[in-house]
Length: 478
Ligand SMILES: Cc1cc2nc3c(=O)[nH]c(=O)nc-3n(C[C@H](O)[C@H](O)[C@H](O)COP(=O)(O)OP(=O)(O)OC[C@H]3O[C@@H](n4cnc5c(N)ncnc54)[C@H](O)[C@@H]3O)c2cc1C
Ligand code: FES
Ligand code: FES
Image 1 (cartoon, rainbow, N blue to C red):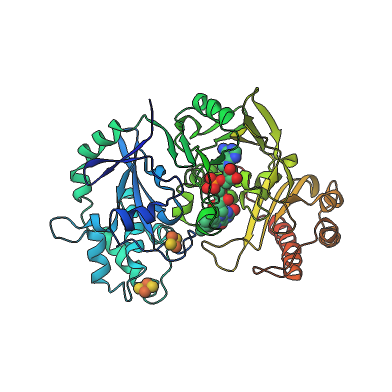
Image 2 (image 1 turned 180 degrees about the horizontal axis):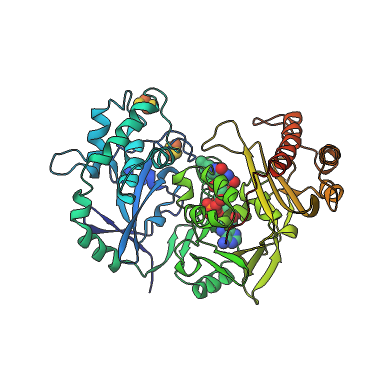
C-alpha cells in the first residue's frame, strides 16, 4: 500500500510524519522539530561525524544497528527504521556503558565531537561481541576529534570488552522487533508543495514510477546526491529512493562471476569480496567511513561517474558488466564503455542500474592502491588497479586503470599494449611507466598537483610489479 506518511520507531512508539519535505535532512528534523540538540552539525557533508545517529533496521528476525551521518540523510529515509539518538542511550537516569566508558577514560574535552563518537561506538557495541583494536578504529574512522585525541577514546572503547552486552535496547528487543515489523512493508509517495519523493519496495514498482517520473533523480545511499542540497544549496524536486528495495540488496557468486545488487551497502561488499579480491576489500575499508559505507552503494559510485570514484578503476580492470533495467528489456553493458565524459554515463532517462557483475578468473593477480592525504575517510589523489596474468614471466593478460588521472576513471591502454606478451623485466616496466604520460594528462587541484599524480601513477605501476616479482602474490582464493 502506497502511503504519504513516513513511519518510524522512536522511544518504543511508531511516529508518523505526513508529507515531509523530501529535502529536509534527518539532522535538521531531530534538532529543530524533535528538539533533541545532542546531535551536532559540524561539516554538513558527511566528513566529521558530529551528526552521527544510529538507525536500527529489521534484518530477518534480528536488528541491525547502523551508524549514519544524519546531515546527509533525507528525512523520508527514516521510513521503516528505528531512530536512536544520543539522548536515548541514558536509561532510568543511568548512563549507557558506552557513555560511562567515555567519562571514565576522560575521552572528551570540548565535547562537540563526543555525541558522534558515542553513537559510532554504540553501533559497534551492539553489532559485535568483542571489540578488537581494528574494529574500534574502523568504527570511529568517520569521527573527527580535534581536542581530546584518539587514545583515550580508543581506551574507552576497549574497556567495553569487560562490560555487560545487555542494555535497555536488548531488554526491549522484542517490542522493537514487533514495531519494526508493523511498518516494514510500505512503499512511500510524498508530495510536498512542488517536491516529490518515492520509495518503492519492489523492482516492479520502481519500473512503474521511473517511467512516470522520468525527470526524477535516483538516489541510493544519497552520499553523493544529498550534497546538492546541503552544500550546493539547491533543491531536488523529485527523488526516487532505491534503498528500500530489498530485492536489489544481495551479493552472490554464480556462473563464474559475482553479482552485486544495486542497493547493497558497501559495508556488506567489503567482507564478501575479501575472499575473491583482498585488495578490493582493503580499498573499501578506506572508502569514506563506516557511516558512509553503511548506506552507499557501488551502483551509486558508478552512477556518479566520478573521476575519483574509488571502486571504478578496480571494476574497470576486472571487466565488470553493468546490468541495466528500465522500460525495455534488461541490458548488460561493459563498464569499460559506460563512462561518456566528466560525470556522464550511458544511462538514459527511465533506466536504472539493477546489478553489477564481476567475472572471476582463477589465474589472475589483482592489485589495487589508494593514495590520499589521510588513511581514513579521504578522497583519493590517485587510485590504481592492476589485473595481471603472468606465465613463465611473460605477461599474458593485463588490465590497468587509474582514478584521479583524467576526467573519467580510465584504462591505460598504451601502457597495457607495451606490457602485453612482454617479458617482465626492469626495462619493460621502465617503458610502461613512460607510456603512462601518453595515457593520462592529470590536472592540479587541492588534492594533488599534476606532477605528483603522474609520479605516483608511475610509482604504483612499479610497486605492483615489484610485489609480483617478489612473489607477494595475492591470488584469487576459491
Ligand atoms: C564523507 C564522504 C566520503 C566519501 N568517500 C568516498 C571515497 O572514499 N571514495 C569514493 O569513491 N567516494 C566517496 N564518497 C562519494 C560517495 O560516497 C560515493 O560515490 C558513493 O559510492 C555513492 O553511492 P550512493 O549509493 O550514496 O549514491 P547516491 O548519492 O545515492 O547516487 C550517486 C549517483 O548515482 C546515481 N544512482 C544511484 N543509484 C543508482 C542506480 N541504482 N541506478 C542508476 N543510477 C543510480 C544517482 O542518481 C546519482 O547520480 C564520499 C562521500 C562522502 C559524503
Ligand atoms: S555534520 Fe559533519 S558528518 Fe555530519
Ligand atoms: S572533544 Fe573537542 S573535538 Fe573532540
